[in-house]
Length: 330
Ligand SMILES: Nc1ncnc2c1ncn2[C@@H]1O[C@H](COP(=O)(O)OP(=O)(O)OP(=O)(O)O)[C@@H](O)[C@H]1O
Ligand SMILES: [Mg+2]
Image (cartoon, rainbow, N blue to C red; front, side, top):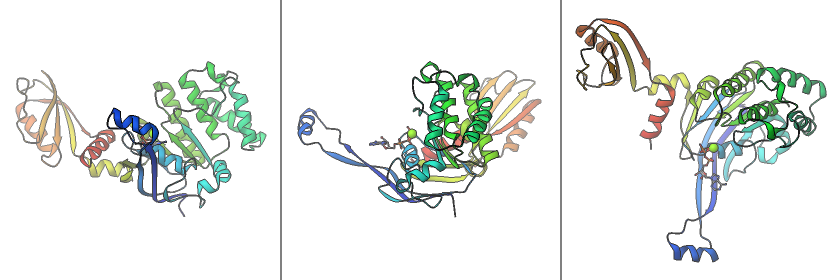
């Protein structure tokens, strides 16, 4: 049995329709018109214990809505979510004990009491044994860098410090699954690194299962082996990152250092399927379309026109591959 099973999951929101004009707006003050928005449209996937999955896709594609249904915050319109064999909305207490949740733009800590006091409230709420609570606190304090913050009220913390404290809070009760909805949104690079390191460690050492949504592909690449790509509420791709990179790659970049650049005065390269991205008198960066041209043939062509001093070939990064899939499939 998969730890998380999602089948034919649908969520519809009912919302007030935008009036077409002023007259309609006045009319709708008395008799509001509603429309149904299908935010999640027949989604299916399964996640094994210990997996770390990147749940990605453009704004409004239904990521947060899915996370809310997985965690039991929202009830599905139809379809099913099973977490450890249980339906989250019907087993809130049991599910809450097994799961942790972090929303990048929301805090679970109290505004004006020291962080440690908030943690103690969580300890009571989740019935965490004192010994375990202290052990976890001790372990998290250094990895995520919150030791100095425990005595400070949240209102006195910076955004990055606040987020680190919130992330540690989600792990105090030894959850089996943690949902992270944009955990690094708006953060500085030091906080991002710390958070990624902490999550990676929890995943490797404790085999905590993760579902991470993020628009920062460094989060996804450094934490996840698998990506589920959503668009318009539907799964577009669900596969290993390396496989996606291999199967959907459409371009390669080749960078040359050379004794002199024969293409310095021209905008076009001499082969079909190759474009010049950048050039200086001693360097040239080309982009090759894999379908049209072989990278080695391009290298050969360049080597005939000048002396190559150095060369590097780079595949497309996962972010641009995902962007292409989304644009192509609309
Ligand atoms: N409470 C709500 N009532 C009505 N519509 C909603 C509600 N919450 C979300 N939506 C709509 O549902 C769709 C999916 O929203 P959701 O928040 O799941 O997107 P998302 O993938 O998390 O986007 P983002 O990357 O911007 O966080 C959007 O069109 C949004 O406007
Ligand atoms: Mg969202």
